Length: 127
Image (tube, helix red, strand yellow):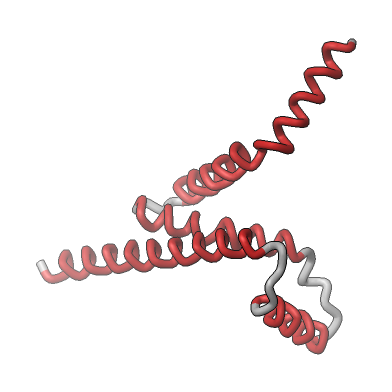
């Protein structure tokens, strides 16, 4: 029984220390394959949607339930608080920088993928 406790404590230490090295690629790859399974054929667009969608879902999960808002004034208060948090430095600045860079790269890749698809459709229609 002591071996099980030692194994579980080592596993817990590993997950706490290096869990992000496993979980972040696992989440991104799962989201990528879910988008591919949903029917997106272009790899550029699929990668762009992945890089754009995962941080958005992360921030929605992190901010908690937004939908149980009673009236519009609570919604505007929440929006104003979020807007002020954007310009206030916090200890989560590296996380904000990583997710912002991921969303920027995802937006650029989505734009490139859509432009390539549009150009391909335009050239096929001209023929």
